[in-house]
Image 1 (cartoon, helix red, strand yellow):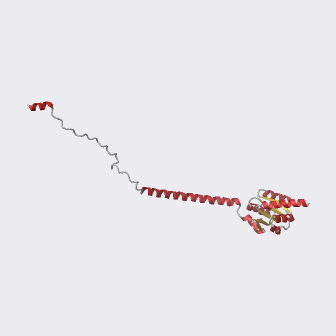
Image 2 (image 1 turned 60 degrees about the horizontal axis):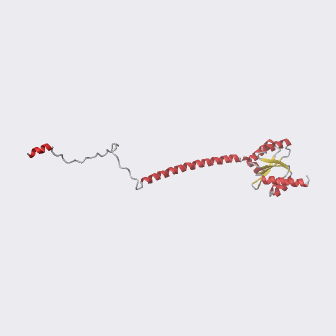
Image 3 (image 1 turned 60 degrees about the vertical axis):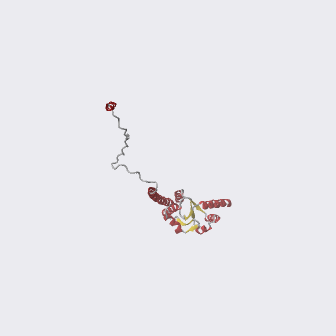
Length: 210
């Protein structure tokens, strides 16, 4: 490979390393081209699976600040540059290793730490991001429902205290009771003043004067 082409490849690998969520390194000794293509397609939505030259990968890793990866670059190497869910990718790689015995997981790199083969394989036993998010969403929903119930209960108690306080205010007097039978009180009758007694008829008075 010409020097300019090597430089370009190292730059490309460095970019892939820096843009990846994690790296899963495998040994593909004896893996056929057909099997490698099938695995690449299976990982296409989650990772970039590529066969690399150890010398170029070591140089790219050093340039990317991950020189510790050189310890895993022994024998034919293929790397899954994980761009999606790390756990889901690890599950697919482990399943592929079961299907293709020639594929062996050598280790990985995650969160600034180089992983051993056992640690890289253990990622496949964890819950996927979707499963964890689903659990978190369920927990949040339960907490929101609980908070809403508590708020409703507190609001009810507050209104009860407010009503009790309102009844004890000085101006809050009861209305005067009405008739026992519940009927409306009778209207007062107009009382006509008694006039003076009417005088005797004129005829009678004249008779008495005689």
